Image (cartoon, rainbow, N blue to C red; front, side, top):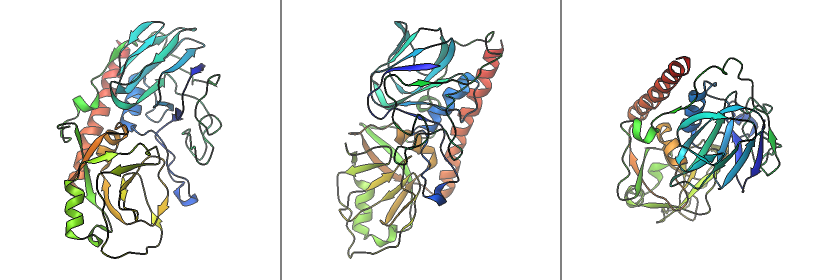
Length: 325
């Protein structure tokens, strides 16, 4: 069991998401940085979909009520366990009574705390993820609060295994992603269904603008400021299905990128879609970050997932070998 001691707004329990429920109007939810969550679970020998805590407001403090193993991944940050520093992208052991303090990130937006056996809250529609709009999943469908107690799954057979090692983060280890240049995060996208409704001038503006992630952004969507994308004539559209990564353009002209808690349907024109291989990078971009879009083909989008999947597979294989030594 773990007890939450300090938690500001918006920290939640998340796994890799609630799939297969969109036909009921239920969004996927799940970790904004699924690579970080899966990596933390791989370090611990958990199933990749085990639930952890997505921390995006700081400081965050919890107390271990029993001996446990845990890992911290995601944003580069400073944490302490019982007053001693715990490195990011590292797994280790905690003893009953130890207090973990997760501090403000130096780079990135979200830290993921995973635990040996995963957080064992009930599954709702196949997922333990907190769905804030619907009010289910996690603990009572809400953000974590001081005094909350969350159970951790069984880790029988791990008492004699090694847990004090780490891994290079994906932004260092995964090759092929566009670099961050002059403070601008490059995000790869494909054209979406209504791209050709926009004039060539608006299309060029979309690609050339350095967009700022607005403070009005959240897990549902990132609102971008920096320019306006205006149609030559208003277009009325029927609502259609949308998924995380879709870049929609509302009448005001400032794009919105749908994120983990994205609506299941919408009627705004779709300009582009962020490729899956870059969604985790976008999930680590805090409000105020500057991004720009680069176009890739469908074939390039599929190929971009290969090094991401290889990274996680090699991480799990190496961690399994290390723990067994």
